[in-house]
Length: 248
Image: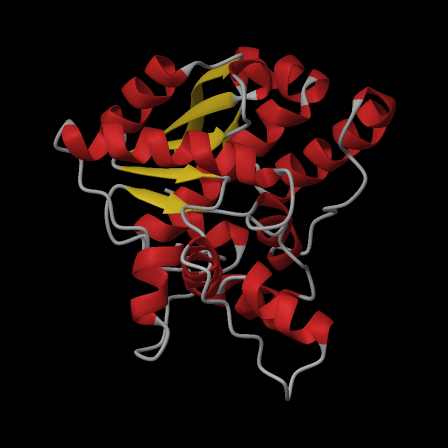
């Protein structure tokens, strides 16, 4: 099995791709690339059995409907809701609220934060995958699945905060050591130093691990009531297993 993790950014400079080969009782990191353009991302995903992408796969249905109504000059604001409560219902997807409830973490709002720029790029990549014949299901049932590295790390009881940026490289290295200590079967090989120098590379590896959990069916899935929203808005696959359950 080959899983791929993509830490997607709006531009290639901050985008990282990791590939993990699961065989012979080990998870061997075959490749880690920082500065991945669309072509590199597409090639990696199409080679994978499962690929985890750290980026929203869609926008809240309520937000899409709001924008459409605004365009048509037909916005209706419910009088019974306070302004902030109404805006929150537009800003966050169903899966965002599920992750918030289950993990205590609040994903960035694709409708109201800068992550929207990255989501635009992601939408283009998903469209290219679909046109190339790669099954795309925003709920995660196809080749690609939406992942959230911080929630993944927290679920596995690993440190998950304050490792972004050059000023936090020492903490990033400590978190990587914690991950390797919890998963002695994970072999970074020549990519160890890259993961210590670039948080994007580290997140890509975590995304590839989350993709492994998704491929084994060991992630949270939408309820029947959430399924329709998951197919349009996207669904964050948070592991429901221990890290060691991924061991090949």
